[in-house]
Length: 238
Image (cartoon, rainbow, N blue to C red; front, side, top):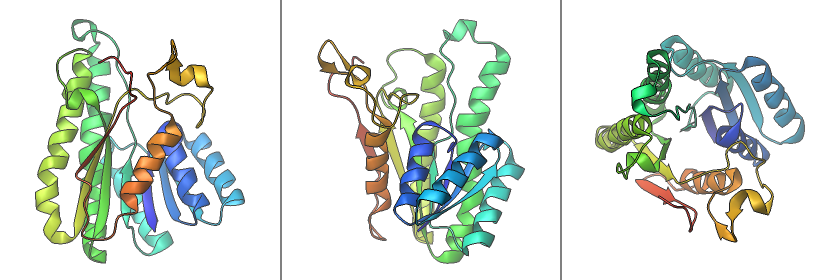
């Protein structure tokens, strides 16, 4: 399988890319941090039977999206899937969010999701199908609490997936959405117990657990669509 993974220089995207290469797949790794991305790709290539191709770029920049798809097509001959793990975060109350932070958040999480989807669809169409997976958060599903800006961008990504699913199906393209609760994204793949538990209760997911769910979505046969998978820790407080 040939997969484009965005946001693959850290967090969930890094773990997904690593797991795919370890399983013998070919991966286009796209992220903004060029040096780290290239170092990770070199490491994955040295240790896994698959192959990683580093393509530094920003999903919020159309030319970068086009280049990532073009590199994948030239390197591997086709692209079978997209895992869009690129994203950023703004914690401040909406009334305090700086305009530049607001614009950057929307450019990455909303414009980026739309652009990388649009960029890869012709490649899927050429090969007769593909699978598109976007990572989303609970505030796109339960819009009852702040951060407000997070609810805004995640609601937009949900709308993209729910609508694109119908348009893309005749092309043989599966559109999948994975909605996550709290994730220890900055921690190691399998972190210490106290990172995932608080007062003896599970309140965070690990990157590895999220990756396993994404690999399950990727493993489905053509014609089987995982419309949405919602993954949460049992004792998360919403």
